[in-house]
Image (cartoon, rainbow, N blue to C red):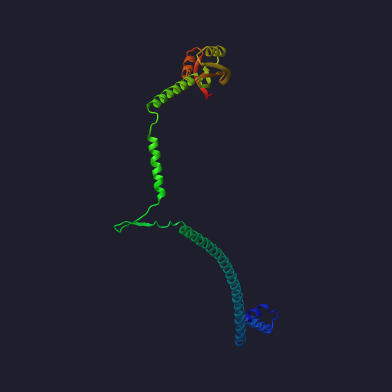
Length: 275
């Protein structure tokens, strides 16, 4: 145990008489009586006390700094251990992958050696030159292909078959056209919702609806209708109809309905849906 630690744990005051004497000298000097010898002793005691306090503070600060250093050192050691474990895992994975690659390379080398074709024997001519002899199998295949192409080029039936094929083709085209003509065509229809607005609230809406329904055309069929409030007591006629797209259009309906100028102010298409 160091002297500083001893002073920290000390509970007995052995030098109390000296401190009392120093305190007495201090108050005597303050009151006017001076004793140089006693003043010197008191100053010495005060200096010792200051030194002791300074040593205690230094020891306490040193112990706290040592504890902080130890904590930091322990944290660094733990981080290094974790990094070391990770590196071991990476090295093990790389070694396993390398061993697999070596096995694959060995297998590929063996298969390449097994597939390598044997050299064809060479035939020597009388002049001393040597030429490698080709296998007979490819030659036979080429000859068979040439024979098949020759057979395809031969026309065994001549022009008679061409005339019969043309007649058969014409008959089939004619039958297809007749079948298509008999098949009913799909009629494109649309559902339209019209908003017919009157001039004012005094317009007879019943008469206005009669005028609208009086518009008749091929491919036009009127449906349900209702009165929808617009504002200030005015109501508009909302009427539905189904039309054939090839025969009736929205422009024609608007033009025919707006002819009733006494009742109709404007006509708008509120909805248009294909059926």
